[in-house]
Image (cartoon, rainbow, N blue to C red; front, side, top):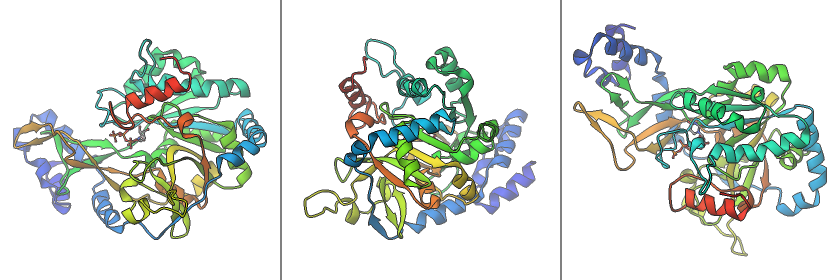
Length: 406
Ligand code: UTP
């Protein structure tokens, strides 16, 4: 793309400021800027603005399979699940493309050392939960790790350096998710250098499309994988390829399922399983209105009580059917450094929006979802912040409570 074309394109979308420093740039920097501009999908800016205005539909509460039922049918579920793993029908997908801005480390979040007296990365912690499942099944489920352009090299290197945490290395494959521009509150794309727009990972919603478009897509087909267990990097008690969860989902006949925990308070920052316009859906905490959030039943319990922990099982055939449908964009408020009047500004608090699609929005499209309640203190130890709520401190305490040596 040349300067004239770039200028025209930017004028169309009201983003001419991206060329503001063009006159000061070297030839190499000019080429880099024009190439970055040519790769941005500007249409998502207007889509995102329209999506942002839509809001959520009519909500009603959703049920989940209670802990008591799982306890009663444990063996039935376990057998069905382990059998599916043995037959190679299940693979895992680790969503590790996020930037972990709240944790504030300059490294992939999974490499963070949660250990106290020994080194124990978040990745190691999670792999220690997957390995025993593979060993009992006598079959190592494939693990597809989604990274971003920001952390791909360092993530691959970390797995390699740590001997793939004792897992079969030929069963672990990496792929990179796409990026989207970060915008100011006024909707202007930010520059991180005079020749470089801020491009950030475009949310975890595109995990399946990115997987299919990468060499991992071929592996998925060749291996005949029918179910994908998708999980987030930031829960150190995450049970991966949990046979009981898999079995319960298969026996339910539903095309997807999500692990849920009872929320501890109306304000807890987790997506909530509910029905939106009659269909199973998950609404993010920042989009759930006060009238729903705090609603209590006669016995004082929260009506919208089931929080998701980013651990889902998706049927691949159904994903293929819906993967052409676009997911809405969300504006995630984040701290983003940028150039203003030629000078780098590093904000102290959130100043910009990243454009993200979310996995929770896939649920609505899947056309059915089993909510599967799990014991909170055994399976949910989120690491979002360094201290305080959902932090390294709280996660360490829960790991210790679960017998993990730190
Ligand atoms: P979060 O919503 O916590 O985002 O991600 P984040 O970027 O990791 O952290 P903050 O908000 O900046 O502090 C939830 C899960 O989704 C993954 C993350 O790696 C995490 O497992 N994710 C998020 C992606 O894989 N890609 C993304 O673009 C965003």
